[in-house]
Amino acid sequence: MNDKLKVGILGGTGFVGQRFITLLENHPFFEVAAIAASPRSAGKTYEEAVKNRWKLNVPIPDSVKDIQVKNVHEVHEISNEVDFVFCAVDMPKAEIKELEENYAKAEVPVISNNSAHRMSPDVPMVIPEINSDHLKIIESQKKRLGTKYGFIAVKPNCSIQSYVPPLHALKEFEPENVVVSTYQAISGAGKTFRDWPEMSDNVIPFISGEEEKSEKEPLKIWGEIQGDGIVNASSPNISTQCIRVPVSDGHLATVFVTFKYKPSKEQILERWASYSGKPQELGLPSAPKQFLKYMTEDDRPQTNLDRDYEKGMGITIGRLREDTIFDYKFVCLSHNTLRGAAGGGLLTAELLKTEGYLVSREIKKAGLSASL
Ligand SMILES: N[C@@H](CC=O)C(=O)O
Image (cartoon, rainbow, N blue to C red; front, side):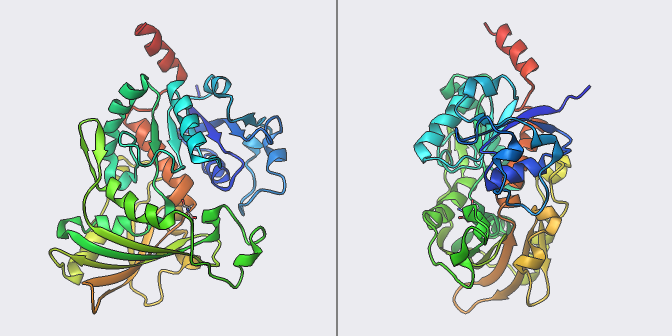
């Protein structure tokens, strides 16, 4: 018997939606049961809906080509076909907030790539290797929403996923001041060079809203549950500049950091090499075996050579050296549409399933009728 959980992809025709669909092909826990998008795509087969819009260099999986795309607003209909949804829609923030809550209130857990709920205190924003303990806040959220199974969990912005993990591994030395510049790929804006020609031979020093997210979101990840919400950490101070560069995939960051207790270089390298989290402990299907990898060559990591490290789910780090103003500086890289988007969402779903937060519709129905 197939006991895989049935998943819906809201925003399945966009760049991140396409990534979800390819990552879910032959997944051991989940299978795609519904794909939803804007009313413009609704009614078409998935293959028709993404014709001339398929952005990945792997083919559309055969298993989804004939699925009829639904209107993302048909919450009731979609809820009857899936156990949970991934959400990667492109809509105004207020509409996304409402849409995600509508699914959660229909008892369909939502794992979201969107920023709409990232700062809601009772919504966990998860990098599974770092703050899996924040999942506990889901019980408070369910109380607020009046649900038994439905909730929202989000993944953070892709820009922070290269530098937060290496800093997190050094938390015992208490990073105090952090200055980051990110060099972000065009796929972060949902684009390829074909549909964004001005990005060839060009650098654009502005990404709307990105610096605010890059400075604030790490503090929620490092925050702690107090009562019915997650209270953000008050340190380190983080200052960022986010730059769009002519790269297809891969967000690279340069980091300068001072610590309260300055570690030695050997201590830093040891903490990075030995760092692992809940996904590694549980052996989750999308977990990288070695989450953080330090590269000793002077010219690594490079986006083109290293973004696919551990199938795009690991973080590569290089050029660790002492600085003239800060204690240390280094460079780090993550794949923005894998670890930073769909892969990170999928790993969060694997964790949620393993921890008992995602269940089948049959279990939900039985549980809901028992509580009537
Ligand atoms: N906002 C980012 C996408 C990551 O989530 C970007 O524009 O690169």
